[in-house]
Every structure is written in C-alpha cells, then in structure tokens.
Amino acid sequence: MAQVQRVALLPNTVLETSGLAQIEGRLWTLNDSGDDAAIYQLSSDGRRIAKTLYLAGARNIDWESLALDADTLYIADCGNNRGRRATLQLYRVALDALSAPDGSRVEYEVSHFRYGHRLEVSASASHNFDCEAITVVGDELWLFSKNRGDGHTELYRLDKQAREQALYPYRTYPVNGLITAADYDPVSRRLVLLGYSRERFFGHSFIWIIPLSNNGDGAQKLAPEWSGAQRYKLSTYAQWEAISWDGSHRLVLSAERSPLSDAQLGEIRLDAQGLPLAPEADPDDASFW
Image (cartoon, rainbow, N blue to C red; front, side, top):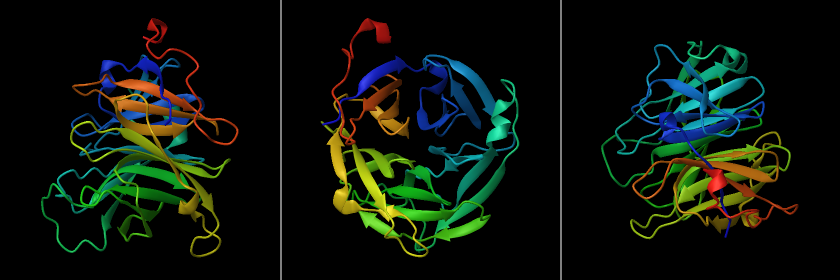
C-alpha cells in the first residue's frame, strides 16, 4: 500500500483538477470539460490560485492532462468518456509564455490526432478509446488509454510536432483498472501511472511504478519494463486525477471534488529504493487544512 499524505484543500476555482505539471517549483493545473480554456498556477502551499492564463480561441472540450519538456507545456484535450469523439487535440504553449501577468492570453499551437485502428466511432459506455494521461519521455509524448472496456491500458507514442497524426497502440499493459494520469522521471527512469479500480462500489485508487529500459523499437528508444512494475493501492480515498514527480522520491497528486471527497493535493514519499514510505504526520491534523 502507498500512504497518501494530504497536503492542502484546493481552491474552488479548480474543483475539477485533472492535470498537474511542476514548473520551476510551482504546480500548474487545469480543469476538465466545461471550464474556460485556462491553466492555473497554484500558490506555494497549494491553497490559492497564484495566476490564471487563457488560451484565447481554444475550447476545453475535455482537457485531461498536462506534460512538459524543456521548452513546452502540452495540454491534452483527449477525454472521451462516451466514445463519441473521432478527433482529439493537443495544445502546445511555450514555457516562456507562462511568465505573462495574471489574466493574460497566451499564444499556442494546436495539433490533432485520432486512433488509427478505430474503425467506427459510436457512443459506448464500455470502450477502449478514452484517455486522461500523457507524459513526455525523451523526444516523444506517451499517451496511456483509459480502457473502460477491458481494464487494461494501451501505450501510444505521439510525435510532439506533427500537426495531424493517426495513433496505433505500441503495447498493452494489464493495469487492472482505469488510468487517469501518468508522469515520467528521467533521473530515476521510472514511470508512474495513477488510476482507480473498476468496481462501482467499494473501489480504490492505485499507482503503478514502472522502470523503463532501452528495449524499445528503433534507435534505443525507452520502453516500460513491465516485469519490474509494482502496483500499490492508495491509502486515502479520493477521486485522484493527476500525478507529478517532484524529484525522484516524492509524488504529488491532485483529486477533484466528488460526493465523498474534497478537491485536494496529496503526496506520496518514496525511499531510496523507490518504495512508498509511511506518512510523516497525521493526515487529519488540522494544520493541513
């Protein structure tokens, strides 16, 4: 089991937090469908909005994930709960643009992608063409599907610069649940996947921590080494939607508000071997709230 230390309640502006990215020591997040085309920088304690930036002319159909590399923040409009969407969007914002004043409109580029092996687009409550998780690995964006149909996840590799592309699954992994977030730490070469079990009642959230190795296709591309993957059930119940590495020994999570839990930030600390540690303090301590 992985112990989740609750850190802070999130402000009302981001009650549907669905992505996290850590840039120069500050967390950025976004809301999923229904919000403005906006990204939010959190205060250092996570309890306030420090800055809001807008993508003028963009539309938040179902923004689900953030990822970043050395010079770009990627926003994935890839949510597809009912399976009706044939084409999905990827927004690219230069990191330099994030220094704009609060309330600014920032420039961006947008590209489009689709699932190349999807032969028919029709509404369904049980399909394998939803996605809430992207992360940067080397020169690629990795997308992990949220398979409502079989509880697995497919890894898709995106070209970060392509304006139009069709995606095909690279590998399928038996995650035994629905994946909501992903992040890669290039220092430890570990990937983390966040998700929740498929049970409608008495379910739970979990993480997978997965080493990467140079056994991929092509010129020494990295790929998940599934034989070394470890699954951990999360100790604290919440609707955990996003996750980000903070160094190689700390994971930061965000949960959106639900009937049974608040919108909040949490953390999981890892030891030198990458195993989750017990919390350092009582998660119900009033000082956290």
